Length: 460
Image (cartoon, rainbow, N blue to C red):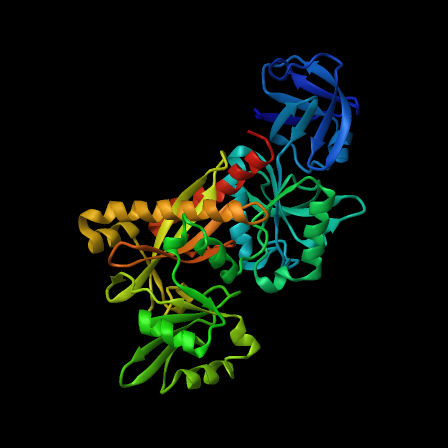
């Protein structure tokens, strides 16, 4: 469907039940004088009579009363589309989160900058895009007291709140698993799904074991998945160590590299366990696997250990002696196709078992790294990373409920050029975009949120 960026103006003399369309819009949309149409913004709608206005601009004129009925908080350049006698303003895009601070300068704390970047990146498309929390939803009036980042004139931008219609599309950015389980979050998402036709993408966090099962059992992706077991026995851990020499223990529902242990075995010196704790990297030695598990988990039968995965260790390529993995950031574009927006190379901090920034990891230019390690095969390896990432995203979305518009994949590559998947993130962080070489990719990443939303809401 074609949508048009129009100039929407308020005019007090416009009849309350009339909508005035310029001549180009009348022609393009096939409207006739005095025709009745439905006018919508998100969940708000009314019936209006079309009145032509003599101007060659792409202009729509409505009354202040109509704007109030539609809960249109702002007018100006706005995208509009008309199909089946229904004119829609928008799309209305809501970013759902938690953690409202009450501070109008940074209403969502440190994440205000992140949400600002999403809003500003989508601005050229002129959607109605805002941020909201469950507490801002008024179910009685079916409106949201939402927050916008707007130019208030003279290039002065600030956060402002305004009563708004329910969204056509929701981009879910609940910050963590604990917040995801809040009754207010669960209830809001459930009611929006049940009572509105809105699309919600990237809802919820992934469980590592569930994702492993989906991808390791699929013929197109099985070769990328390291051997993994949930709540393994001591005998199984020993078997994996004998085969791979190194294994990782990971919480199946964890994120940010928290709670991960790396275990290696020395024939004469026993078992070595390395992990990150209280901002430092720790190395312990044990003479048996039983003692190792007992020290960290109490027992192999403990409830905590039952939620852990044992994963095959991969001998990754290195940079300056430090293991390197890759964060591949993917988005759905306006055609609902997966695109690799960025490949960030992350070198582990000294003594660290992960490449996370918080444990001393650092971002290095990907092309430079691959050229150094693989020489003439660098382009081939980069293409393999991109191809496998898109393939895994496609296979994953075919097997889960709900829409996906963004993913972060943690990928490893060994010296044989084999690509390995370590983890898929439904709420990927954006640390890689802080690197100067990836800042433009970061802007494109933020823009894809609006592009995909336009497509979902049928505004293209």
